[in-house]
Image (cartoon, rainbow over all chains, first blue to last red):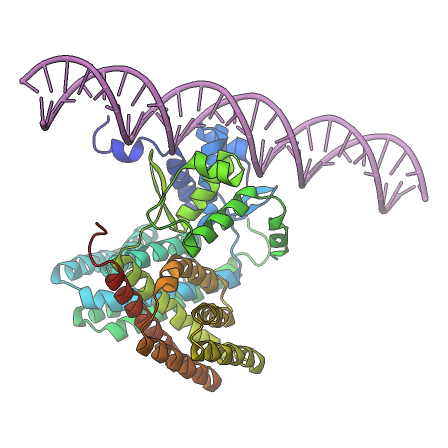
Length: 227
Length: 227
DNA sequence: TTCTGGCATAATGTATACAAATCCGGAACC
DNA sequence: GGTTCCGGATTTGTATACATTATGCCAGAA
């Protein structure tokens, strides 16, 4: 199978490894704080140490793992302060993205986002958390893409990855969930009106609320040790 | 606690290599677009390929070099669009930093920045470009630090590095240089007044103007093809 | 003359071997 | 009994060897 897909999958073993590890970290398979033994991972993935190490360096650059000089790698363990700081930056980035997205918004793009919003509301109505998260993330990514700024898209995605594991764990209280859905409806309206400043403000608020929810969940779930 | 970071200088050859390469790229010793031959660099730096490759992966993650699957690394060549996109994101980040800095501003920090501003104005008065750039960058970094958000500081620094080589090359026309200095004076006033929204606006404008200056210089220096 | 095909060369990707450092356990000493 | 120091085992860091892929040249044919 050396067709067009071969261009991506063929070489770059370390990239594939990095992608796999990223997935495992983002989804929580590799728990925050877990130490990563090189040989162990090599056996598990069926590769040699060289590409694994290169993959780990790449993840470290994205701050998904922390490397300590002669003591190996471990999955980053974000403190409450780290999470708050990341959300703050993410808020500024999404705010910018929203403002730019309003400028570039086309009827087609708007319809795509509107459709996703409807699907997300349906997921919310039937309390389908996984579907909700997926659609939520997709909407935010669409907004970031609509800004048509590749640097913004990449930076946003990198920061988002760091938080994803926590977002996924935060099992919302219902009031906050309802508010989040309402905020999304407002955002859609702002996009429709191409009201950049309002969109920016809405997104900053939305992210701040989300941060609050995650931190609350964090305090409630694990004041001491994880179980 | 990150007291472990003090240990970094000890081993971590690949980190030292990455730092050195970063320096060479940021300062322009390695020109944009230059292809990096692994063995050549190894001989030049007196190391083996393994740590060099790990260093290159780290730089690629920061988008200072571009890796192509079986074809090695080359220093990134930013297009005008890339530069504009980066400045746009940088503007949002510095805007946030400025707003937060106003909240956290203390008399001592303000006095430090004010002293730098005075020095920078002196450098401007005697048309000392290198000193001006150094102080300019130091002031922006102080503002970013004053935001007291490590994620913001790091993200800002990473984006700034990508642009540094270009900033350094842009030999300002005088009118724009004067305006930039005046804008810095306004920023200092906003910090003194702890006027967050104004500070944000000033920084966004300041960065937008800087972007304009760099792009103008770029167009003037290399309008078409270098044939 | 130009284009194509194949081969030689060089570069990157991966694996493995070796060196240095850390960690853990036990024994000796206070 | 507790502390300290030493030594083996494990783990990471670096170098080198081998495999795979790209590149460039030359010959031969249209």
